[in-house]
Image 1 (spheres, rainbow over the protein chains, first blue to last red):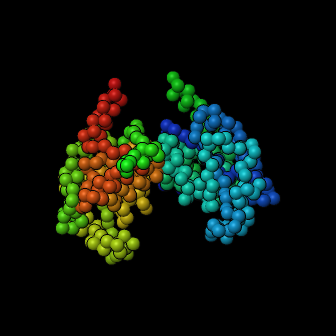
Image 2 (tube, rainbow over the protein chains, first blue to last red; image 1 turned 90 degrees about the vertical axis):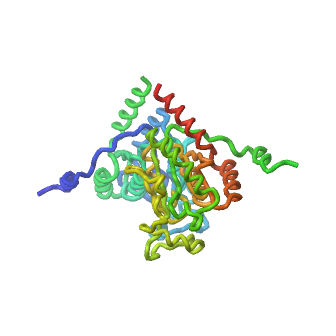
Image 3 (cartoon, each protein chain N blue to C red; image 1 turned 180 degrees about the horizontal axis):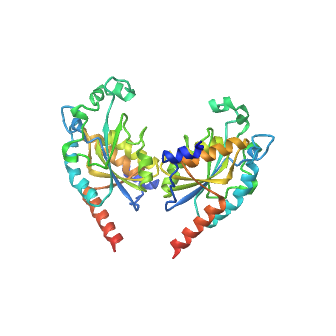
Length: 213
Length: 213
């Protein structure tokens, strides 16, 4: 009996997109509330968050544009939406709440992009795509959480906006490991390249070395 | 007494954006209906359309990305919008109507982008920005009609999407010359560079010669 992967192969899905000339790093929603299994976290999220420290450090060293996202709703409830109706605790992620602050170990530095969003995708009704365009970005490396929610949505929109998505398998996490696996597998077939953290760091480093020659 | 221009200078508006590394040509709505003073044309629209012929040829010779737009509304009125209430004659611009066909002298070639739009901007509700992004475009030459309507809206959105817009002053036209001049002035102060056709061709030719060295 053919496996699920066989059907993608037979229908010629899952081609490699490869890297362009200018990559950026996008870290989606690694905020305190998602790093805490008692709030929005659990599964392999904290582990993915830990793994991203080394990736962020490498991307900073290589001078890549870095963008972080946070979910931020107004404390007065004025911007609640269908998403926050579906998941009411999202309403508590207000500008000053500890849960909505980016985790200390991935804290943004001055000059890095911080996108506040109220919906799954980092791109929906934000200026992240124009910002990347202005910086000449053509490839977006994606880390963050959760794989089946905001990561899936952001990867989709990276592709729709004309950038090449590279999803870092050990730097994305989900509270639900089955959902994590199935989303990674499908995203690799339909929208994105999938690499491990160490593979992407090696690739970026070797490209920079070649460019310097 | 200070002139209108002095206050822009005093407040440090109107700085040059310059030309980036990869330029696309955008030709907005040079369709038969706008080339006809009895339909949507008049003023300097036809002259601007004539002036665009050598620009299009030069851009093709340099292998640049070319995008044309048409206003196209559905035959049955299914996609009529506020703009169509304001300017009901737009409803005659259907897919096969003579007036919505691009003028012969600027007829698109296979491989050139053709955007069908129902609103002023070439970017609103279309995939033109992602298409340019995927091609690595950073600068958009804007030509077409009318200066105060679709050209202005498209130049504004080119800037909002992170591209550097350059409006070609003698390749944009308007049925009314007062609005034409006033809008070119606004665009130059706030959003875009302005060049004449021959200036733009000379600049691109010299850049291409340098790149070939």
